[in-house]
Length: 335
Image 1 (cartoon, one colour):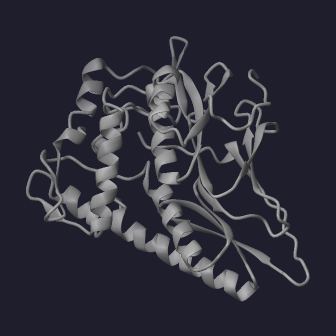
Image 2 (cartoon, rainbow, N blue to C red):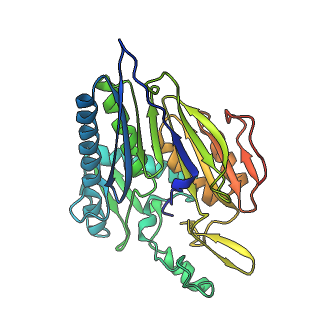
Image 3 (cartoon, rainbow, N blue to C red):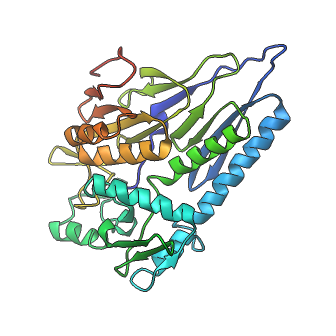
């Protein structure tokens, strides 16, 4: 169920100006963190301050990565996974609470999202090598170690215990959004009034561009990346896109996404992409991933439980569906 972020789907428009008397500079840096690309944009009073705060953002993301990345053998999450079926593992409150929120989302989606998806066998191949669907038996077996109900949390001891040997938790669908939110909070506490933290498409924004204009996101047509579907202004909010338009297989005329339903082992079908807007990137990413799995009808029902969030969906056949509270009214509804 790992979320593939379509970088081509979200185009960031930044126009930087400086004003005499109230000069602000915009500095941007790109780096690789948490297994993906981070673009960090900071607006500050001078270049030295902007660069110093970009350094602070990178340090914070690195700290979070060292706590929660399941591919780092010495992270706390890796220790939890290594002790699956053996013993509870004490973790920092931050890791415990992130796991709590992930389990809550797993419950709300009835397993459409599942933080224990990391134990899933990778039997589906999306590199062109698959010639036939896996057997029903193989698909069932691929998810036998997946199940958020087998995660035992002890709030008093701050421990996480995975009941089954071979179980794993992972934050591939929440971690980058969580990191961008944490960094935005840190920058606001330091008095940095504007910026963007973009973690592989999980984007947290705040403030305005130096010319006083809002940050703007262009949502690209996935079937023709030269064209935009909509341009959306952003204030202090977040946007994430989950999609499958670059990684999928077709069997018997049906399109199967590389985003796997952790409850069934079968790939998601029906939606090509889901873009979610709202206050924080962690929740937006969890929702966009879940909605890809749940599909159009169930996905929109899920979103109703989160009234501060809105979405734009694109179906496999190119139809555009928006939630009722989506702020941009005029855009193409069919490609």
